[in-house]
Length: 405
Image 1 (cartoon, rainbow, N blue to C red):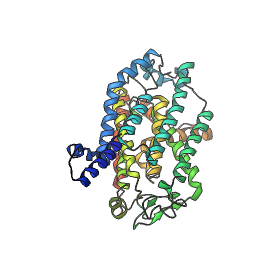
Image 2 (cartoon, one colour):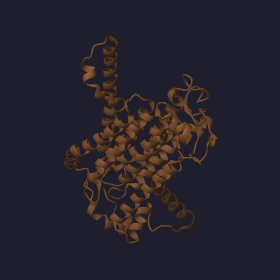
Image 3 (cartoon, rainbow, N blue to C red):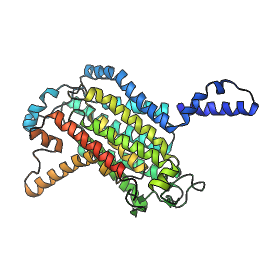
Image 4 (cartoon, rainbow, N blue to C red):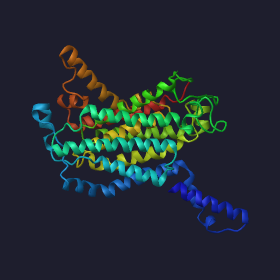
């Protein structure tokens, strides 16, 4: 909406300038602000936050009236943890609809929604959110913590991820001709990395290297799909304590919003930082700031003790959006650092399951790892805040290594 208003104003302003007569366009010259990504990104974050605060109570009341309380695992399933989380019984879930709604509305208002990077991230977020909504609904309906079977959920995640990955690889404004071998309009699309050298969409980059680490070619499609599925599930695993996943989402989204903005500016990306540059990628920062603002707004109700849980509706959507944003900025590997808490949570589950199957012994008292610290005696608030601190530090470290010495 804001970019459309700017385009309309600019057309009128140019017409008035050509005619030599000053009209409404000169009077409303402040509309020139709407062209700047920084202004629209800040506006998107603020709008998403305000919308969350305004409609959040109504959404929570509606979820309570629908009796969509979060099913809590029994003592037979989680033993001592059931005592610690017993007070959470009946807290409404599916609160992720609040995040989804405010992000999409803010993106439509403040961004150019047909921008390919914005469109693919919004699609992945909405599709993963819909899958999570079905999962949450099944849990609530059957009053069990199982939901959709793991196999069914994984199949749908792979389908969504492959669609997003294929779009990224075959959309000319993103990949350029021949997966980046030649850019459209002599450098106006596709990625470049240092000295204006075009790189293919299949190139895997890392900030500490001035050249791509490897070019996967068409194999990058399953690679991208793997990242989306893995990140979506990792955020889902992190969402086990009040506000934990929400707070980590904020630091990750802000970091990638800055990355997208820098990658969209030629001098900062190509000449100074030597990171992949694309003419259209800067617009993605508006979407990511909307995600950060929505997460701030949701955290208002989700902080301990939580009045609402995001459920799989929110966690799967957030994971899908962050992974797609990492792919779009050509900083897929950096997600391991910036989203380090999500990686740590997922790895703790993999190690725990693997150790038990191979050695019949557990590494942690319970996985994901945030429950391990709870069972060690940490209060829930201590676990949450300390993980937030780690998430912020990891995001800062990820940004700090952008500049190649």
